[in-house]
Image 1: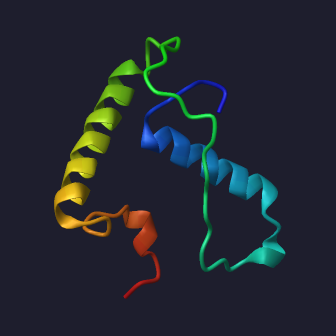
Image 2: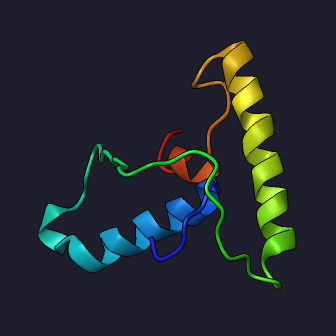
Length: 88
């Protein structure tokens, strides 16, 4: 990522963009894809974006709520709707 973030949606969008750019169509369909992160640090400051800060704060609040639900009810208790495509 160009800028440090603790917002899940920002990381998710970057992963999707990388996949679309790098994955050849011959790999499709993919059953399972793992994603890793490195050089993680806690509590660093980064330059904010004046126009995105409200959106990022809402996303952080969403991440906090989802973390609390998952801690109480398990990792699979809440998932993104995108993960449910094709599961009927």
